[in-house]
Length: 443
Image (cartoon, rainbow, N blue to C red; front, top):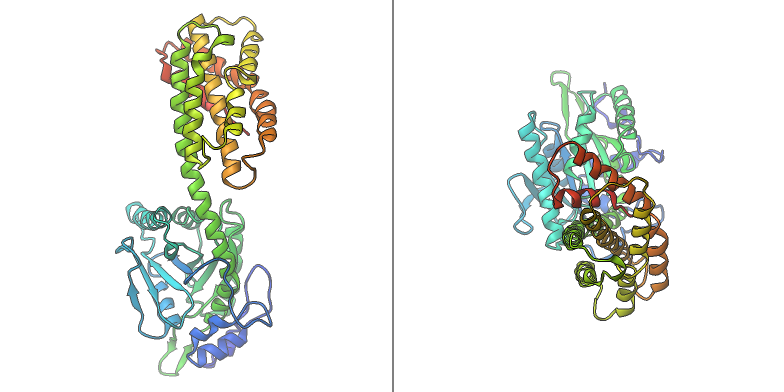
């Protein structure tokens, strides 16, 4: 074997089947000029990287099992003294952030996925907490814009559980690009086998199949095969890794912003569902007091309070959007939702439930349906898909989606309630509320 990079053709293994990038390997590895590779655009004819939005420096997180060679890879890329930088209070013993002036991105080094459930959970929890804290603190320096997932090229094994751990650790960043780095890729035939193995493993993974953008075998540092004969495998593939990174980082920056908004939306949704659950329980309790529902205005203040709380969660000003709010309120106790619920109850044959309980179920259903419908409406406004001025859409949505689905919802609620009752279990108001919330779904 010659001591020559040409023995290991630096082929491009990205899913897009690009032409090989040997030029990067020979020019930048041999000239010790790795940092300059970051000014090479992935698109021919461009001489700079353009990031959308305001990004000081994008972040790449390096993930993989212990001993896979993450530290060697990082040291080889920087090629100079690398200072560990503490960006905010979230930097922990489990996570270290590195940067220098030459490389156009930060690298976040994680502890390896050690054998054993406790050690694996420690690594996963550290990265998840760091990611969530960064979003909660609105810290752009902590956003993850790309994932380098390192696997050992000499092991020639990859299990589904490895990708599952990766998915769990990076679950906040659901859509950022992933580049799989096959470290210790000393043998060309094994490289090709490993690339196929990785490709198929990700292709069959439900959550991460779309995120994989490139598979890059690398040799991060010189590996001596025979010291006496001076047979070595020299660094290889690092130029291609930088090239693929440059190509997909702009997409990664945009994706991390989308993931950040999705994270906020999930937080708001969790709070909103709690509000609806509490309101439905209150409505159910009120409904246990016999009142005729066509005149059941006693629920109206409860519905108004529910909608006001939901509007605050999604940043829709309650007092300044009276037409929108009134359109929602009008669909509740005095409108289409209540009428539909009552008609659905009347249509159930052989119904044998105590009147006060039935009254409570109807009241809880009305409040829950109005709340769930409001969540959907406010999310559409929050994400910019609808305007607060589009009250006609709101009315049509409440009529066609929320009200029309109630018949099936109420049937399911009654069935579950009677089944629970017949089991001999003592059924309380909270049990009924849980059944209602389970079945009132807006699709």
